Image (cartoon, rainbow, N blue to C red; front, top):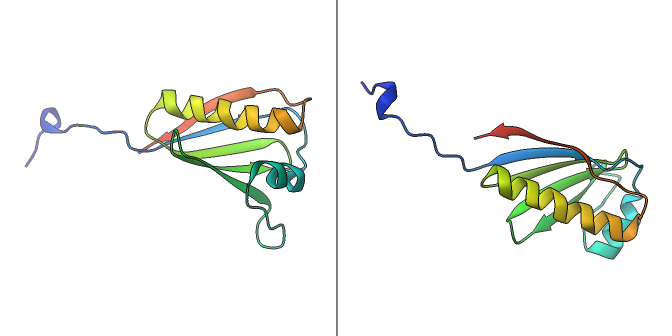
Length: 104
């Protein structure tokens, strides 16, 4: 049996959330920023980044959930890239409440 001193933790997936402070027009943002949005199947728009390799779900309320980041720093970097993407379409957006939720 392994003792706790022999176990190593390896973070492979950080989940981060944020709030962009304003309602979002997901159709417009998806169209201009190459996201996927089908309101008949799911209420969020899906976006992907290559670097850091993450996927995000954006909701019309202005909330975002970002998954797949390998570290806290890359999760924060990804949220900021998604924010810049949204801010270019919705100038009234502000990035609030970035929170790292889960490590696996």
